[in-house]
Image (cartoon, rainbow over the protein chains, first blue to last red):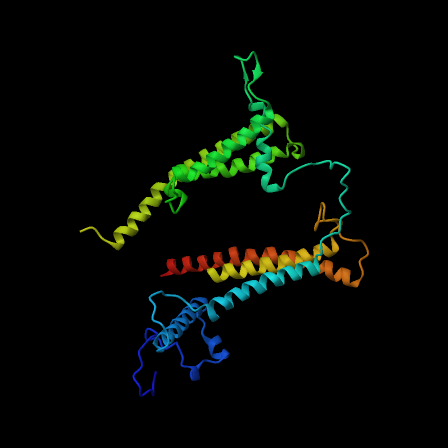
Length: 253
Length: 88
């Protein structure tokens, strides 16, 4: 800065955008800066870093190696802003769209449709796998276990399969294209979670029951194969770009 | 780019929120089924007709505003860049 006799450590990278307190720009001066959000972010972090450094240089301040921003005001202002937004949203919605007051539940009558909450539909759908329960010739066409036992076992199998996935693949890939097989396993799982949830409400779906049952198990495979094919064919181009960037950064000797 | 996305998202969410409230007031028979999309009331009063007009206006503003900032303006920018590259 000009006109300053005391040599001051340059902390702003020579840009001069961290003003001393008596030179803080007015709002109109701030608005004239048109570089936008990136500039503002840079100024904010630079200012915060400067304040942090000033604090460090005070004698009472314990020098620490951890880089960070003080909880007050930086973190607290952000947290208060987020909290105010969500509280305001709740107040706004409860004032403008109050929920309908339904008649009280009648505990002496069974409702027509009994369903768990939507996020448990997949488990409810797994209870309806009766057609998959094999009739064993060894037992003279009898089933080994009741359909409902079979459904509960299917739940155990599915939950067990989800449990062992992290042990089979630790998720080192940052993008699906890096590991097409595991990405397509993920697509399979997502589609199967959806179709098995639809199966659980099959009486509400305008589709033949058998067709729906077949689609429940076919669609995940179709989606998995398609995503595998797409990702596998994308990988060559991805690796090419990656290598080109790498060799641009470190040209071969 | 990021600014354009934020503008489109802001338009979509805020106009969509206002549309949702107005639709909840004027075109909701019941929250059990068909909420927000019920047919509008016949012979609304002045406030009602203003609200119904605002509801439709905000609905289209949400969609067209977001599309403008996410599709149209980036398209124009890219077309301008391509033209400038071809010209140089």
